[in-house]
Image 1: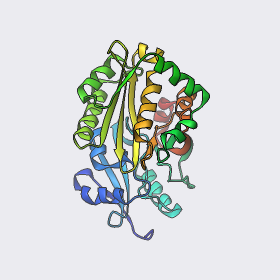
Image 2: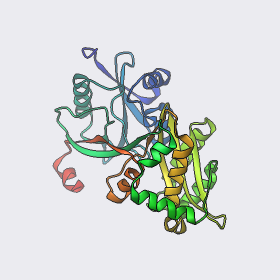
Image 3: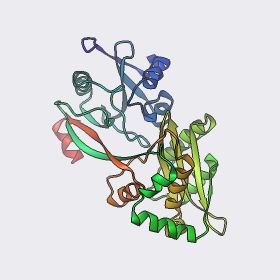
Length: 303
């Protein structure tokens, strides 16, 4: 397998049926690498393909100052090579990437381990929780801090709804942005929501206050057994009332006993990591890959 050559394939020449079949059979499959999802989050993407789509790697690129470079798109935590590559396969792909792009800053998937290459690696953290136990067993693993927050939330007589519309969520998100998003980025999020909801791949949970005001909402997207907590927002009241704790607990309760892996997408921010770990989630390491062979004057600009 690893003696075959890698082919650079432009987006319009990709066989997306073979691409998606490769992902369907990959033990490290992620929703981010599905062809439809890449189409939503990128203006354009090409790919490296080994053999007859035995191994694939999406190339999410942009062009600036006449230089084409790889970047990590928004709403996309991990990409890299699929299915899980051997060391030899990883070498082949990353060598090809570094030959073709003078600047690379991408996140590899958790099952693609670092190999010696021209680039450098930075360890990052995700958080995962299997939901295949009963709710009683899962809740018993909540931290004292989380249990206290949930008790406070329940005292506020919150209610959980499982069918928030995409447009309602977008309006809510716009009014309660913790990190500013551009109109283009909001459109990308809207497109992801619309596609996944119409195909029963996604679900938006909302929490209403005792005064019937939406105070927290979260979008979950499913790919096979993996359910990703992709995006969320809270009002000031929701934060005060611990509505997001209430929402996540409600999702866990509803899906307990199923063969689902809840992917919190992790965080390098200690406070956010504490939220996920408080529900019993365990850390999962993945790596950011960087390669910089830019001209000296552009290197200086990027410092």
